[in-house]
Image 1 (cartoon, rainbow, N blue to C red):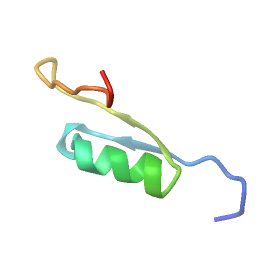
Image 2 (image 1 turned 120 degrees about the vertical axis):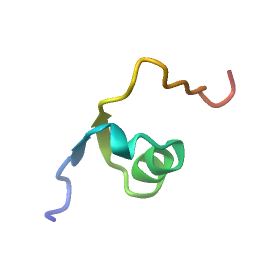
Image 3 (image 1 turned 135 degrees about the horizontal axis):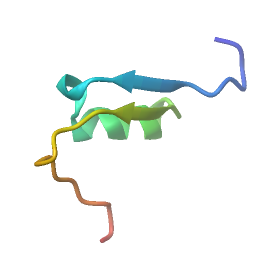
Length: 47
């Protein structure tokens, strides 16, 4: 992957996992768009 390229992972609801989302953003520096169920709940850190 060339340096400076922004990566956006597009995924279906099977990959809706908080640990994965944290890994993608904090470790890899990636962005993501994951389709989720309406009942899926998450909480932002520090809130």
